[in-house]
Length: 205
Image 1 (tube, rainbow, N blue to C red):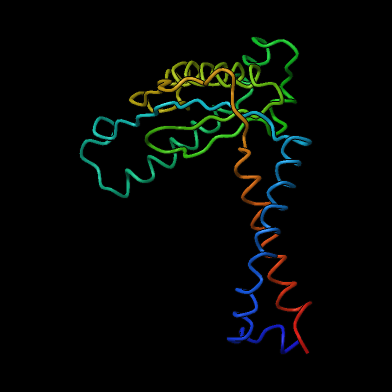
Image 2 (cartoon, rainbow, N blue to C red; image 1 turned 135 degrees about the vertical axis):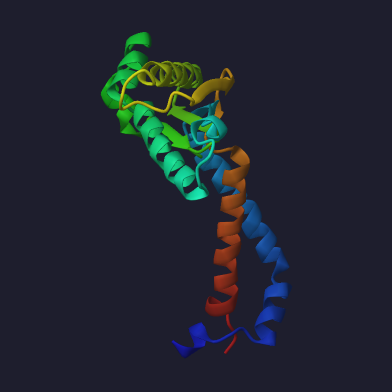
């Protein structure tokens, strides 16, 4: 146990450097295995749409403190996130796209990142690239429409908030994880495995 957690010696580093052929073969083998996994069990396609959300702080809080603006941003951001996954938005997407159910939409194929004052990234993962792009477009259209609709209600977003689609989904959508990522992870994994073999399994007595 002490040997495992002890720092590597100079001889250990020399043995690692001498095993460069083994490392090269391991990296090549790992990359090939990563490519095989990518093609045999490919990741889903991912469509990406950007919606610019402007909270218009100058108009909403023209003479308030930074702390009050912070709570304003937090509250309004939470409202917008709830709208993005609301029943009204999900129902619109399901109705506008055949063979799509609300249950499927809530199963994890939709994701939202960087919700703040600025660009909101809407992602849709699906095995069909065209369907992923279509769902992403419908989702953002429904979101923008519902934001504008609920601004007229008492519990809706602040009237100064605006939401505009600034980047449409590319058609067809690309893979959610690229082939190069699989190659890199496979190569690094086998390099790590190879270093363990060199340091511990093949350590000279």
